Image 1 (cartoon, rainbow, N blue to C red):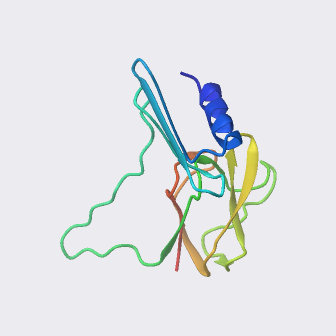
Image 2: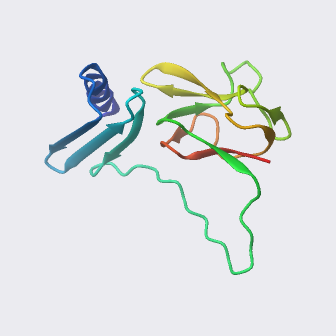
Image 3: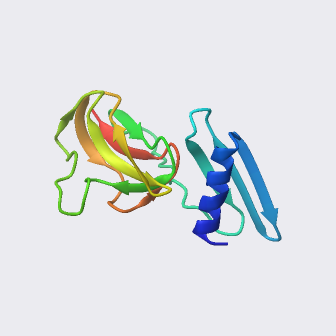
Length: 143
């Protein structure tokens, strides 16, 4: 099973205006879901394990990190800048508002600018440039 075939399934799903698609062939089991706005929400395969966000457990008395989290609205590749030569959209310490572009997520060869949709100061960048991210995966922490 290669990624190009999965991309074809996603494209066919979008062209047919489906909100869910399941495909099973031997030990490969693919389930695709999207919201009505044509954004693919999740891709799961039984054959190839997906990278899952690691849940952080805190000890008794320890506090969760402070602030809001900007999450990935889709599956894709995270890019901190519009090109390798360009400056990052945001850095730790930068102030953002609802319309501030914080990164790009590439999905199916389309580059989607992601806005903060919150305001505050970037306190942490939770993913690396070029990293594949899942739907709803935390990208930035904002205080």
